[in-house]
Length: 307
Image (cartoon, rainbow, N blue to C red):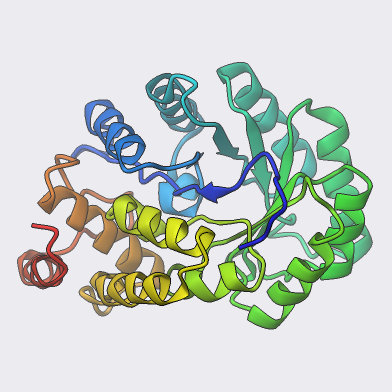
């Protein structure tokens, strides 16, 4: 575990967005989920990220979700708001709304849909930071935006005070290690991994924290993992990570569907079975898990001692 002390670090799960059967935001379930995460010992909340189905929500729904999360958190932990939009001006507009709603930081990806040059990506982050008076995180998720953020650019932006951190879901563990090496010279810059099943290794390699979708289902387990790593008890950290890796098999319950739907469906179904949210309803066109798939999630939860 790094000895640096960035403001945003530790366990910061990307909050799932519960829905009703007709596609509305289930605010009661969302409030209950935030309470469950806080009781589980999280250090922050990432609202409106990929696990929040932000790409599927309307603008009004995004605003409603962030309002509920900020209010339910009540200042006990920082709320980081995803501002996932195609272009710079759209991100800025969304980030200004997030600031008005009480978010503590914002997250943006590289521009997408349009073809983008590295110089334009750097300008994108600089313009967002200049326009919005909140700490800015870069979200490295090439599987969705089709651009891998350059490590040198990220460290340059961090050194210039443009970026407060990076949420890395690139799957490029080598690049992540070099990002951690560079961040060692930047004490306020947070390097967060979104890699659920190798968190112990990422923390050992210098990560400042973790943003695990699976953390919605078992925040207590990720708390134990992070605490063991902070104490230098890597055997305990590995044992907890092994348990969480087996729990992550809930994302394989759904077949013949997209990876997004399988992952979110597994998380939501597990939360429903644990009594945290009322339904495993998904945003269209994704389908919720059926009875057979739900039974498989139940089996994994029972094996993990979570039911």
